Structures are given as structure tokens and as C-alpha cells.
Length: 77
Image (tube, rainbow, N blue to C red; front, side, top):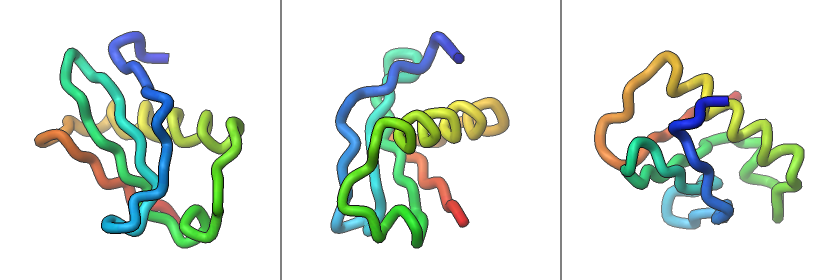
């Protein structure tokens, strides 16, 4: 796990973006992460196991990409 990433416990569905979202603290910058997925969109709530999977997806994304600005949109299949 990357120690520079702190995941906030604010996972919620964002109606405007039509995606699940939570914020992370990355090197003193607050970044909103949006997960665009047909499967996730159908869920009324996300359990802790799925939340852990989403956190892992963010870590993998950040290993390969640099955030531009304060939002990240992750397209999932």
C-alpha cells in the first residue's frame, strides 16, 4: 500500500456524475475519485470488501498515472 495515499471514509453515489465517488488525500492534495461502472451504478450501497477493491484500483491507477487537477475519473467494465 502506498503510504502517501490516505483514503477518506466518504464513499457516496454522486447523482450529477452518475458514479460512486470518494476522496483521497495525496501529497496534501484532496482528490475526488469517480468510478464509472454499470455494475456499481446499480448498487444502493457498497460493502467494505468492494470499497477495499476500489481503493486497490486507485492505487494501481496512481502507479501508472499522474493526477491532473483535483479529480480522477476511472472507467470500469
